Amino acid sequence: MESLTTTVGTTRRTAGATRTGAPAVRPDRRPAASTRWAAFAFIAPLIAYLLVFYAYPLYRNIDLSLHDYTPRAFVQGNAAWVGLKNYTDIVASTTFSKAALNTAAFVLISIVFQYAIGLALAVFFRTSFRLNGVLRGMFLVPWLLPLIVSGSSWAWMLNSDNGIVNSVLRTFGVTPINWLTSPHWVLWSVIIANIWLGIPFNLVILYSGLQNIPGELYEAAALDGANGRQQFRRITFPLLRPVSAVTILLGLIYTLKVVDIIWIMTKGGPGDASTTFATWSYREAFGTGQPDFSPAAAVGNLLIVIALVFGFVYLHLQRRQES
Amino acid sequence: MTHHSRWRTAVGVVLTAMMLFPVYWMVNVSFTKTSDMRADPPHWFPWDPTFEGYQAVFRQQLPALGTSLIIGLGTVVLTVLIAAPAGYSLAKLRPRGAGTLNFVLLVVQMIPAVVMAMGFYAIYLKAGLLNTVWGLIVADSTVAVPFGVLLFTAFMSGIPNELMQAARIDGAGTWRVFRSIVMPISRNSAITVSLFAFLWAWSDFIFASTLNRNGALIPITLGIYKYIGNNTTEWNSIMATAVIASIPAAILLVVAQRYVAAGVVAGAIKD
Image (cartoon, rainbow over all chains, first blue to last red; front, side, top):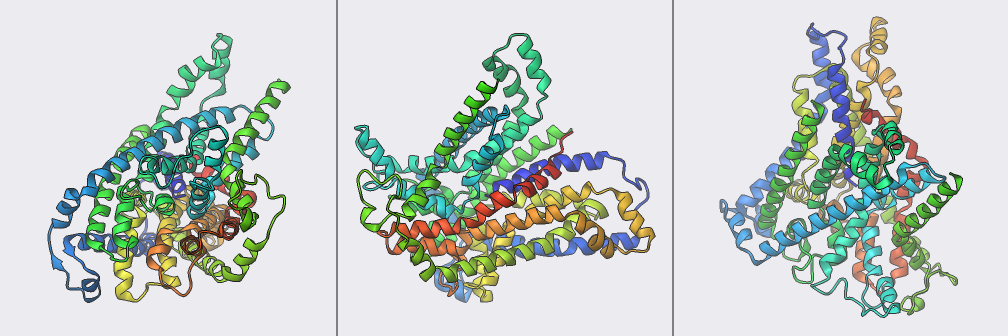
């Protein structure tokens, strides 16, 4: 759901560029002192907000990861300083490589299918036909539902004994699969649910990207005798490349953070079979009776670093497209 | 041509039906009798519906729905109070460090919620804000505030300066201009920001399940989660709760699609 945040953030940058490009009313004169005060007064609540509700929690999180916070030390505030030990511990832990592989698989497979299906749907909806707008609106539903709702619906559909999916498989003579309890299948189950969740986001951005490709290009290509497939390969796909890059990078950042859907469906289990970095962090801190905040914070900070790497690639790309 | 178009509509309907199957299934299960829940093959349509599930929702989950409503509305108010003036300042008043701030707003959206949850937990534990509605409102607003500022800035940049200058010549101060001119024009942006702030707060699971685990007032998402943990046999009740919890999303889709479009288009003019 947060995806829209970033979508609009993306588009806003474009608007911002237009704005700075347009001649301001008073281009040279510096704003009067009273205006400067007003500018500050209007922005001050936001700055205070960011400091108190973003910077401070993040600082506390770093602090947690550098100490050994037991639940008791948490209350008393006398946790021992351990430096980077929490970080070396998590890297050495048996969960680490499993979580790294799962995160990579979860993110990459989700993104590939979300993008491919989203693009196919965007191309499909590009031509006008009856009910086009209504149906496109309906495709937003998975995006707008609370994750706990979609998560429980998928969990019940994939239930080994009573789920509809296995029932259909049995009808076709396929052996039922323990979707949520078999270590071989569980990661695929959460990936399938996550692909379903991500399709609307990809569809919306790619569809709006398609709207910016001039229709004359297709008309000219059609006159030259290009068929639908050639038009896609020669026009749609190349011209959509910048939008595609942004969609995929935002998808990466968003998918890295996913906790809800995995936690609701499998709690990262059985064992570590569907544990990603994000769910690992959640489990250490909140998922068991024994909260272990320090390693959880270390995993969380590792996740921030990974997200920021992709984030800066994304910002770099945005900037390059603007100029 | 018409034939071609009709064929596409048919394909579109089939694709949409496939996409929405999990949602249909949720509704179907919510009406299924507990005794039919384990039928094989499952009942594809609730011919003989039961309302046990919905009765259970109204018996047990009304306080949770109320809590979610309060949290949602509180998040909306806090978000707009912070984001609208900031958007105005960034769009029109050219404060110092505006570029940096825009950059920060984009970067903070990349921070995973689980990390924020841990930071908030540590702070709230000391401040005595765990298991409070206020604590959740603040935490939920962190998702909506950066979005809100960026959306307001994008829209307000498009308001003609002449409009504000005319008011200034008439002697209106910055606050007056903001309240009487900028905000009324930005009504659609305000509605869009409010709708999404509400929906995100309503849907939140991570903050609720970490900062409000033992609260007397739990939001509906946590209500469903605890339900799943308690009685896995009564899936009709769980799914009935899920259906009720989806109502805001449905309303948003039906009533507010044009506001969403208006808000996105405000930032999306690419030529």
